[in-house]
Image (tube, one colour):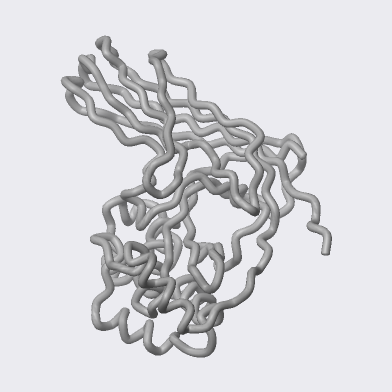
Length: 280
């Protein structure tokens, strides 16, 4: 069966930091470059910084592309500008595994079954995982993501990057990373290896080619059901044309778009803008 035409998506992701007083120096890691995957072809990706600084690139433990740099001169502002173009497709389903095969895989991928501070489950969530543990691993994964989609309301501003799955569940609302953390907590409690995915989502299901749209960083999950199956609990859907995958890990702490430390500088303020355009 031939694959339907893909979407070519151009993304610009700008993070700006303003220091209360000049920072003497800073060290930074950036994860804004899309990953080449079976669903996604990366045509170009680059990171530009102001002030300019030498960069070095590497793959982290989880395979995500990282650009690192030091700014060794005093600076009162730091701007990190990621620009990329990737061609995305709908997912192709693989061969579904039995629970025995998933159990064997879980032994090999223990880090993606273990709880983290952000994905810890309590007795209530373990009970929900038991209730949803029905049928095949794939039907269980789908049931978990559907439950999470209904369990939380999408409300910006009530949580932050350190909010745990349990805190979001008790609050009953959050944003995409909270949906992802809650899904990971229940998927892992059900015995399914699962990982956090960060990236971008085009906000329109049928965008006008060449028309820029205001976007934002997005988060979803991949569950191992015989293959890595991408599911978006915030939207209650599978991952598809609209999703640009950037980084993977156990939870958000493994994949922040920008992470750094600085000397001096006082208080810091940050702003983020994301523009995403379907160019073909």
